[in-house]
Length: 133
Image (cartoon, rainbow, N blue to C red; front, side, top):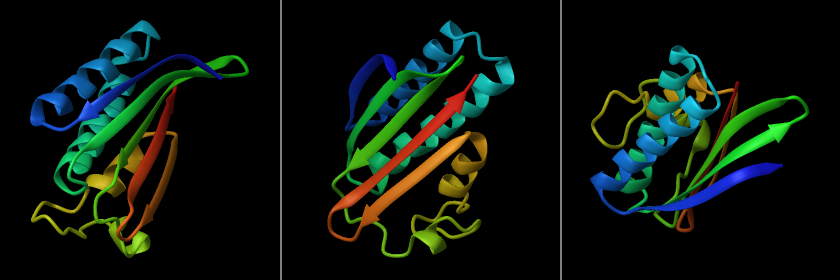
């Protein structure tokens, strides 16, 4: 159940910063520990950057969600870019198509509680994460 939600475009580097700021603001509102705030913000920043650089831009749907007694922050990044042909390979540490360290997707997965990725070549990619308090 979403208690609050907001959709933001990701079309420029400034939008990546806005996504990071929203994640931190909401994590602060939910009284996440500093460590948990940092994990969420790091994952949000990486996935927003991927949406921009590899997906050619897109959007994020951010929500504060509730499940039973716990609350969390759910971020769903969506692009209509080239998609990912081999998700297993893309989630492997060290794999990169952009010249980075190849830790973006795999590292983001380790920083959150729930991680789901859907991608289809030629149709884009959606990555949904949740960090629970």
